[in-house]
Image (cartoon, rainbow, N blue to C red; front, side, top):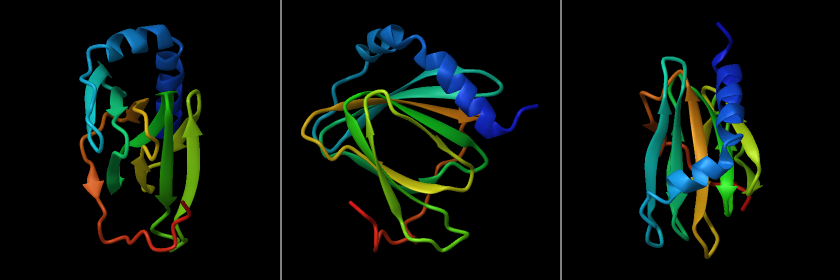
Length: 148
């Protein structure tokens, strides 16, 4: 069986090839208020699951890891900022800007925070392999030193 990172990447690729379908599905998501998010699971298999997340202006999710799952994130519309840290290395937080069309892999064990710092809503697709069963919030890891 391929590594979870490879499965997440392959599932993300297959799912984003149908971006018109994603936008049609996204029409079923409520438009989140500023500072809020809403989500919808759009695929579920034994090997992976996929979620569309709609991000209101100024919304964010606190630092977390995905347990035993690897992840992949694709920005469908808008702009997101990811702050990430490898807790085992003790390295400082790093930041990367993600615009519509950008995709990233989130390996198992990576702690990250995702936010929509812009004034407009954003839409992203998140794929996890194996399917996500745990979202461990890591409030013990301070964002001090993060680049924004």
